[in-house]
Image (cartoon, rainbow over all chains, first blue to last red):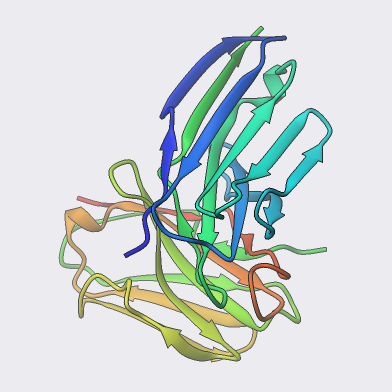
Amino acid sequence: TQLLEQSPQFLSIQEGENLTVYCNSSSVFSSLQWYRQEPGEGPVLLVTVVTGGEVKKLKRLTFQFGDARKDSSLHITAAQTGDTGLYLCAGSAAGNKLTFGGGTRVLVKP
Amino acid sequence: DAGVIQSPRHEVTEMGQEVTLRCKPISGHNSLFWYRQTMMRGLELLIYFNNNVPIDDSGMPEDRFSAKMPNASFSTLKIQPSEPRDSAVYFCASSLTGSVSNQPQHFGDGTRLSIL
């Protein structure tokens, strides 16, 4: 069974601060995705990374895939209250079956 | 464009009753996934279909759970008999086809199920 561990589980910061969320595994993934989920809604895909060492930027969000394709990080610069939500990483070893991490709940206070 | 549509949004029923959750995937999507989300276990894949055929049901908890996809535009997840430990939010997702590297999964807003 492939497991993805996210840390921290919960993060509370002030608007304007930076934050980093980590996603780690002992398994190698062919691709890794990051989702954001808001209360009462389903997860929404933010990004997919497929190449070891890959870095992708989405406005103030920076995603990195580890060189060995076992870990990933999400960094948010100058967080805004709209960034509040549950951030989920999900890995795929083959095909279209995803394994999700436990999630990091981010609260950005005004 | 219509996204993945799930019904009902909320379901409260007594243990022992049959529960049926419904999902309409995005038109043209060939893969459909059922997930369960709880605080303790997070988001877990229960079963997924490609072209209406079940491919992997290893995540289905036990025989009380069953899923069908009679056509490309409709799927059901049934629990019979239901138990309090089945209480969770159940999500349906669909993707165009193929590998997740190329085709993202689009999630519905979920069904919040409470078994009393």
